[in-house]
Length: 163
Image 1 (tube, rainbow, N blue to C red):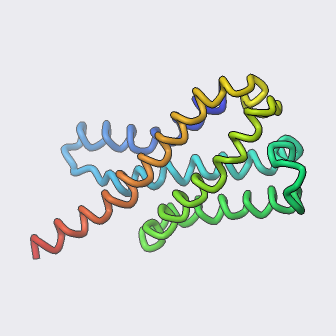
Image 2 (image 1 turned 90 degrees about the vertical axis):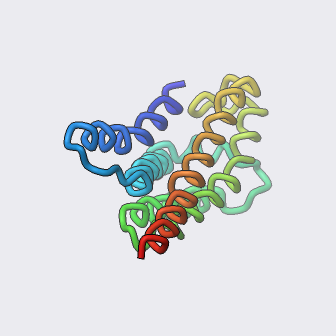
């Protein structure tokens, strides 16, 4: 139960802090930038999970998946690359879109782990954990799409209209 809370805090902190700062200093808020930073911090957290909880991550994959340990490390480093790219405006659009793909592709591992009560990050609760995990996944996907992808497109459209 702690992991989803940590994820939500890491995700929302940069945007929350920037929002408060913008209100006190009467400056415009760059939602896309700070939402991308929050997502980058969350993906960094996911990366560390892959490094520090490797065996638990391996258990979350069905036995028929080949090279499970290598796959955990590779996906962890993919999350790190996404995280780093989310801090650079030039790479944010592609990183956010890749984050969406990763979130969708990785979710079946969470379903498998919860369905088999594999003990990592709440999955040991069994399928009931999906009542927490699925909404968290929806929040992450919505955050990424509406604030990091679509928000950037709308900001670019507004800039073009003002030119």
